[in-house]
Image (cartoon, rainbow, N blue to C red):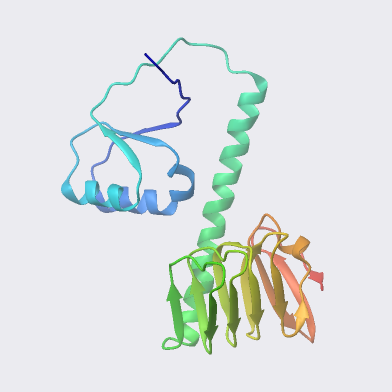
Amino acid sequence: MQTKQYSVQVCETSYTDEDKFISFFDTNYNFFQNHLIVINRDISEKIENYLNEKELKFLVNVTLPKGQTRKVTPKESQEEKDFEVEKNRYISARKELEEELLKLSKKTPTNIKVIDSLLRSGQELKVDGDLLLLNRVNSGARIIIEGNLIITQIVDGSIRCNGEFMMLKASSKANIVFHDVEVNNEFLKDRLSRVELINNEIQITPVLKETNWGA
């Protein structure tokens, strides 16, 4: 007999409102996509279809063993605090992103292209207007855009943007050019940042911290 032992992160929950349940897991999807979700009640077809569509792992009406109580170490306590800080930052960033999208939609309501698919290596996307990309840009992929650009996931590929602003997060492999000026990836690393041209100077502002750099 062969056995394997796993350490699993579990989110135990219940709900009374289907829409609020779905909205909560949509908003916090990045935190729960690798969790086992235990729902302490019978679930509706709508909830079940949503969880399956999002490929979230779940169990229904299961009592999990709690294990032996032990004292939380200082390191674990700090990790929990850090997790809460990052979660709150993520929620704040999402709120600010939604506000930016609302401003953008009011400005050019008929000229926004929304894409939720992954941009793979070798693909090139050309856009004349504004673009909201709800996925990542892989290394070897390229976006050429004349309007404003918002990318919610990490960028590993190439970006050429001539709009009023960009909002993105890039890795060290990315090649980001804004108005023919190559942007230093260090300013776009590990956080969503806004890039815009002000008085012929490129300004980069982290979404969660009001700090400007000239590029």
